[in-house]
Length: 371
Ligand SMILES: [Zn+2]
Image (cartoon, rainbow, N blue to C red; front, side, top):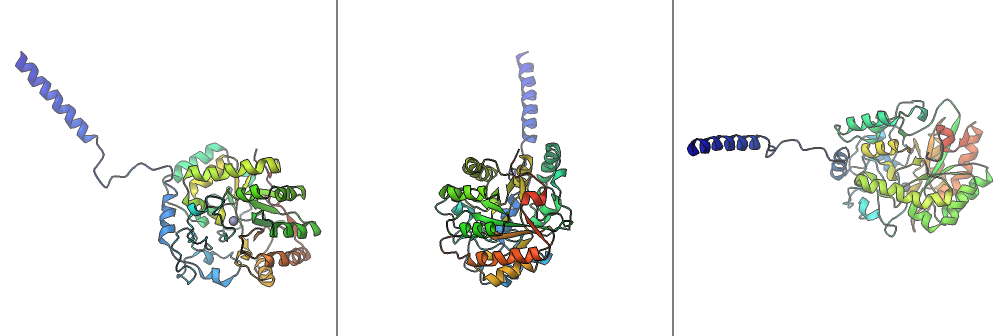
């Protein structure tokens, strides 16, 4: 009997060993589970690979054309910049600060504004922007599940895939245009722009950087008191697509913690620095009640253009429903006087053409605050 029992035990042990071996993962080549950042990873790879800068950056024209989002041969501007962050997904991203990957911008001390140069948004077919149709979280979760299997998408692709979540313009049926100012507040240009808007009785939308708001709370309050709308432009102006999902969310919530006591609401509108956002970040924002808004008319004023150049970049491309990107804050050496000088004429020209200048919530028919 002991011998028979021993043989039986050997058979059982052999079966167990065989089962264990066949359940192990393949040593190589087998697909790994998707990480939380799976959707963003291919984007980062593209960022690090690409060194191309489009001709449009040199041309200084407003960028609405689909061709603006095609890669172009590298230019001198891209040479010598080892940072992968400056080469945006759309391959037209404006330069980031020297040495500037997203990490170098994550602290207020190192944030350089607005070098920023948000790159042009991706053009989309002329849909009637309507956020009233934003689906419930169930639909968003389904989209998120699908997205986890997909490759990283360019801004253009994201805008086409999620026209309710990533807006580039408003309805073309109304003669309305929204002026937006990024990288506020600062002590030099933001007050000057507020003066012009006040003199013309115009209300605009300011996308604030939390770390800047910390430094200039009185200017933030003035923006609100004068009837303008505030959106969230991150805490320290990093390139979102280079951040983990946690870091991205912290950029939003940390900025809110600065802004909310000053402005009295949680901004619904988010504009990602450089206009760049990953699919997973976009879906998180949508699921949490935010609306990501870029632009379809770029003044390119971050290039420190002249008054005439800023005017031309805006007026040559503005049309009904346009969202115009300008900057009202800059780094220490950044000269935005062209923006300030052009603004009265831009307003008067647009009004002369029958446009009504409105805030983004009015253009897009959404609330300024997140519910
Ligand atoms: Zn910015």
